[in-house]
Amino acid sequence: MRKDYYKILEVSPNASAADIKKSYRRLALKHHPDKNNGNKLSEAQFKEIQEAYRILGDEKKRTEYNNRNNHFAYSSTSKQKKNQPPVTPHSIMLQATDLKRKVTMLDPYRMNKLAVYQQIEHLLSDHNINILQSFSDARINKRIIDDILVSARFLPYVHVERICFQLAAIAGTDNALYRHIYNFSKQARLHTYWNKYKILAAIIAAIILTFAIFRLSLLDV
Image (cartoon, rainbow, N blue to C red; front, side, top):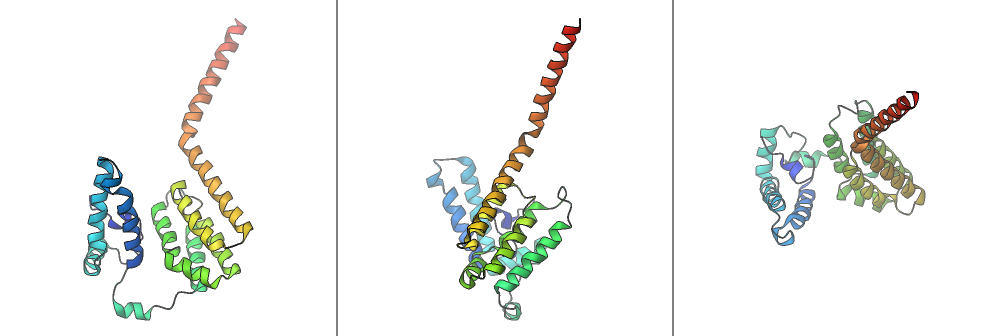
């Protein structure tokens, strides 16, 4: 099976070189053998992280990798970079709104949740968050947070937790927004637990019901 280096480094194909380097450092530190007491799984992950960064951290190798694996969202040519419009809070808001529109049209049971998460991570890159914080436009920031939460409502809690942490950095001093983000995170955690244990709960309920019917049948005898 062909390795997905973007998935290994937990970044999207649109990630900047700075985002890739930052994620690599975070993961390398987390899985470094010196910090995991000979844990074989962490050791194997550390090797994959290094391998992924050797490819994605090199502009030429990354371009070759993208071409082989149809990751066409990224382009490293300076000409295209020059032609890209500057990133502004308004442009980020438009991207968030467009993502929400696309996600709401998808079947939640068949959507590629990892792809949705990666798109949200691209929107919430450190660069974009810094821009939103520096402009501090409360109306735009609230709109972005609301749209991203709608897009994230079917994602697993492990992804929602990170997204909410990033959104909290945008909320600023708006306590109402903080509560909204916190409540969303709480509901996502409960939903994940329910999906994980609902089959077990159904089995226990069936056993209890069967036992109750059995006891009633004994009373009728």
